[in-house]
Length: 360
Image (cartoon, rainbow, N blue to C red; front, top):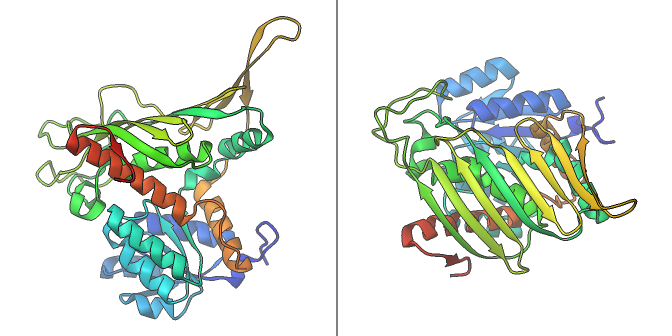
């Protein structure tokens, strides 16, 4: 028996809906946790065959056949299909871990949230960066009051060249709901709001741009997936935005699949008593503090942590919630819905050329 945080994950029968790359990534971590990976579901026969061979598990074309065999499902489909499978699984009485973002549109996200409110099962959303060890440490210091009141977060998730396979669902607005903003910007927004303890967001101003992915001469060194060219690229590849909350806290956001600048994964968290820099890329955490004892001074403290597989840690939290029947206190659907409203607001601000209120 393998225990994870005092509970036995093998007692939870788990299935995966969506057997592409991220589905396999999750399946590997479920096995490492000792969870009972019963089977998977995908509409693609090749994906089903690969999954069945690799994990010695059932693979179905019909979601209902999988739902009949499990207690919980992980949904890792393209964004457009999140609602279909999340709602049906919740209505089936299953517990659900849904990959980010909540959905491809705000309207779809709201329908998922409503289903989650009415369901007997729990629903958790896959913002895995919250489980990084430096984030856990920083939240601990924040809860102790070491940072004082956190008033601003500068959030960066910037690639110099990193457009995912052009021609894939990632670069199709109809399937993904957007580009860099909804793919990687969503992580930056979620983590920034997490550092602010998810206050009420009142307005956003932003510009989402498409400057690289639609070009015949798009230059890159590596690309995740195959490059089918610019013909079907109709999403943003960078975004700049500013977010204001009801209590006066703010977030500045830079996210990009491609831009002519060095990559940047820094999150700067500014508090009234101290601040911090967290590099999402390499896990570096530095605290910035000051004092007058012995003389006025400034202190920069590097914090070393153990490396953590964030998806595995996220799964462990989900499986424990399933085993205990207690809903998650982080990565909740309501928090994910707030993130989705911010994304929708940034896209509306882009289209309308003005600051928009979230409640409009």
